[in-house]
Length: 397
Image (cartoon, rainbow, N blue to C red):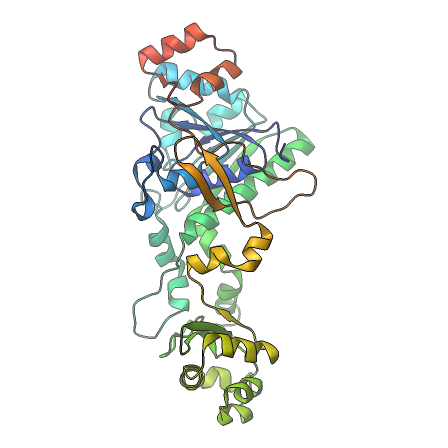
């Protein structure tokens, strides 16, 4: 039983950020009910990387474990009433509709808080609930571009560099997860629910607390180098360097130490807090020229012995097999009724008394509709009538 056992979450979100946030709550033991259209949530029909499945594609599978599926038509009066009845039993309501949609559906905070004043209502958006950008789509790469982060790495004059993850979606998910937990804690103290608003633009902007403060307080320009330096606000050398058989990371070592290890005499008399900025391209280029002469393993051994921060550049195949990853139990495996054996990242927080568990994999559309409705007192006749009217979908297995 997880630490959030007894907490009921209504997950009315789509795509990645919302479902990921709700899944984290489910991983901690909350009863997460995925409220989705009778045709299934959008992500069921769009597979990232082209990775399909038997009945559940990998995108949906990865973001919706530890949830029950209630398939309901919220545009019908009967379907909407089903949701309102559920709200009376809920602790958290999470949605990432575009601004204004929740109000049009009659499931906005003002409406639902009157039904359940203890409700923690998490509203996620791309840019905020109002303002000049409320009609713009909140998409990960679009927000990466707006965040300024793409120009903190890469070469001067070359195209901006995107993250290798769905970074904004993930950061927003964790921000919403954090907000939900904080609001639940407040409710435990006071008995009152509240509205929690999270938007992708603020999430990715505030993630750059240090970088943006260097710009706004330190007045340091965001200036990329001619060489592919990994971050504009960290001194050279800093980045991925080719070796004779791959790549390694080298992270701002003391120049004298690095010079001794790689055999670059010019580094021995350079000043760390001066030359590493003013001669950034020269230092990067000289480091690159030296490192291609040995293997990754050779350089890592030499640098670690000299207490230089360094490490390998992994692909996913390397990461999954890494000794520390295996030791930590970072990945979990479980059996899914239609997708077979599933291996996926687990939950990164460990609790000594209330560990997170995978109680169920991602549900099929409407798999738990009957179960959920019976939880709130609907009898079989009423459920059958709702299904016949098309207000809900039940029984896919």
